[in-house]
Image 1 (cartoon, one colour):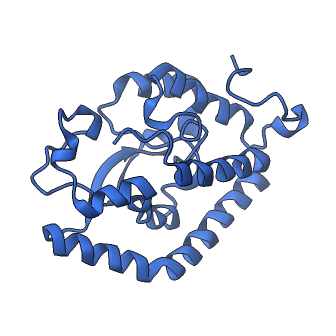
Image 2 (image 1 turned 120 degrees about the horizontal axis):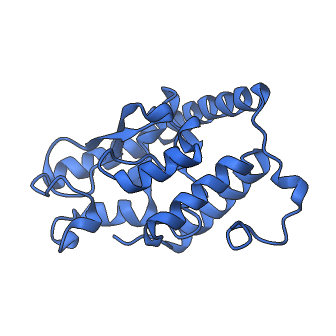
Length: 211
């Protein structure tokens, strides 16, 4: 099941799963330090984005939504608001005409993924990691069941992950769950670095984003 979701050029030794105590400690320490540094460096940008959202559509600048975390525990995920305040509280893909509700600044935020910046605070609080399966909303029952079956909830959800760099919004549910399972089965420093590299490419090319 994995030959189509991992390049053949990767050496098998690089796919060894690193799940020891030291790896998790290193991953959490990296997440905390990198998130703190990113917040300090991007604070001016986040303030500017918040002001632009407020100028176009008023407060609040942040969008808050309950998501499934490690152990299937709920936490509040933060994003910059990219849609008008009167938009229905459903996923963009469920709207008949999502562009109707999109803010002008929201289009830029979505295309550049800058709407994800507030999740640095989720990482700082230990609710998320930079790399891991994207956190689901509770209503996504089918993929939740598959993730539970595949042991995906044993790790923190991520800002980006293996599924996000292999199709993102355009993936069918079962395939997305298999990509999440692949990450769980092969997680390690090398795979995380690979995901970071491909995430930069995806954001630059604006690939896999449906809205």
